[in-house]
Length: 113
Length: 109
Image 1 (cartoon, rainbow over the protein chains, first blue to last red):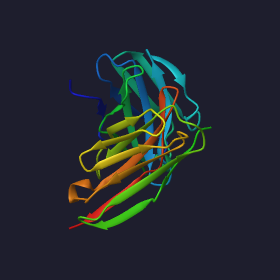
Image 2: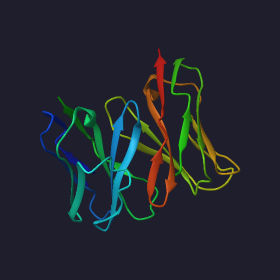
Image 3: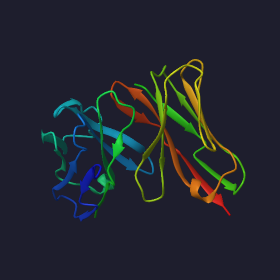
Image 4: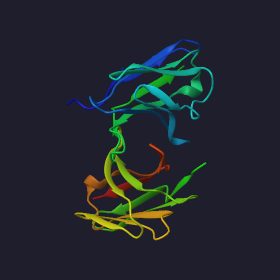
């Protein structure tokens, strides 16, 4: 398996634009997590899904952020409109049920100017 | 909600010196996981501790889980330059992980 795949790896966008981050979890994993990493706040859990259903989105900063998982092999995190304070590295991770570890993708480095 | 605190935030050692990072939770944890993130990389799972007082070793790395299951530590013996990176502990809350802010380790040859 290629692991968790995220795209794009880097994204530079202007304030006010819509940004869509994509994630393909490891096949067979039924949990998918979106994290945001910044120097100030560390790794923050934004939302997670179980069997494509959002379970906990309490970490989503505000209504500008939305996440979907239309099927078991694909998820998106959308920011609309984007703001400079959204600049961060966004990680997607997946795991298999109660299995021990979360597998992280390479991340998307987002810069909003 | 559950909070996981890590200290120190940074540690700079000479190669060959030992290193320890500590993790404390505001609540009792069902288990704790440790991850390593190399500069520019992504978190990679190291180990999970489940039992009260559990100690696990991976070569030069020793992981401990406190008796009350509210704290944990990672100790590296005789650091090497390959140990450079940020070490995170993460407490399990349901099926999601709450990460500490990590300890960044710099090893000077």
